[in-house]
Image (cartoon, rainbow, N blue to C red; front, side, top):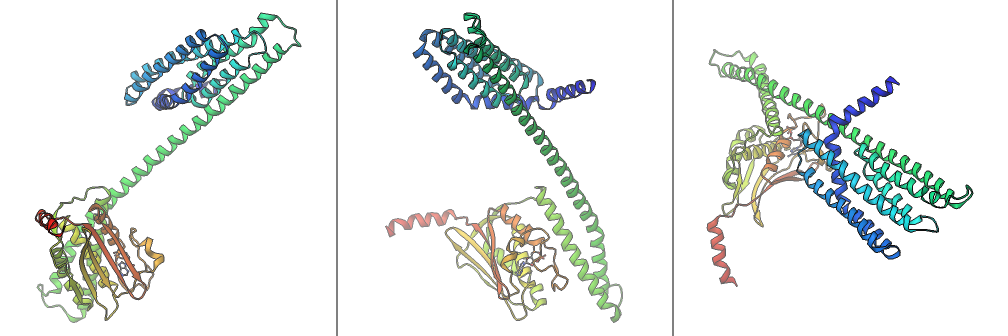
Length: 469
Ligand code: ADP
């Protein structure tokens, strides 16, 4: 018994603290949402009653129901304005909901009871059925606030019983008469309504608990994600500083500034230099990725000359192109083209596309860069005759740490982060990045951006129009 009481106390505590706001908001929102459905059924009931019974009584009862509906709408406006924080407002809302519930269920109770009183023979099918519908409606849609549901159903239940015993009091029938049969049928219906309400209440409860679990899970995931990002950022920063000094020291040794380097040391030094370069690229990529995901990467948008950007990018990869022995040709747009972008980030995009094209090129191949425009869109494409990307790997290419050939026999190095970062940068420019590729034939990666139309050009275009018209 004590255990049961404790469970109920815990439930009440839980209801009062965590969810009250949510429940009140849910209750009022749903009740306001169903206003037309409810009004249509009340109006239909009132019209029928007015036609078959006393129209004055029907109108008065309908006015009562309508008034309670107005109160509900006012309550809806107050609940919507409530941010769910101040518990005092919540308590006031709950009080108003209680008053509205009493007004509305009494109005409905009196309404159906008045019909039953006017029916002097043939049972009370009509009022009972109206009441049954109202009870079922409450069972289905009022499970958010169990006290309110119980209050409403109690008033309906009393009305049911009043109708049930109305004719027993009126006619004092024999136990074998239909009037008693109706009484027992009503008791059965009451049981059915209570059972249904419990089921709807339980399912709402489960939904709410599930929502809590999902919220908790989301919070845990967010916290873990933040810790991971912070860890990644700290580690990357901590690695970068010593690595910079390792690279600098290696440079000093290799260039012979510190004394002549014995020939036997040269291969080891070159391996160390290459690997520290790879590490430094990985760290830069990780830091970029982390900044991008945290929304901390700054973009300095301004008008950019695309031809100029491409020329500069090709120039900056010249050293690497020479090293791998792949010629790069550039076809710029005949007219200057401008886009809105961040110069440094777009250079990063171009460098990634160019270095990939060179990296995955086959001996004897070449890399072609084109700048074109169409329909106020500017396209930069980087085409190679390299290994290509199989169609089944298409979805992987822009993912993090994804490498189409991640096998041990992979010839070229990389982090698998470049294209993911590149895509995020392009997305921030509201551009697109995509590729066409054939395995063993080559790949054409392209990016597209909105062209910035110069005002002078627009004017020129406007002036030219009348001539062509
Ligand atoms: P990585 O550091 O490995 O180059 P990226 O994100 O830049 O990482 O590229 C992801 C993968 O996409 C590469 O590992 C490679 O398998 C494939 N890829 C990218 N560009 C090309 C290209 N031009 N030709 C063939 N494969 C490419």
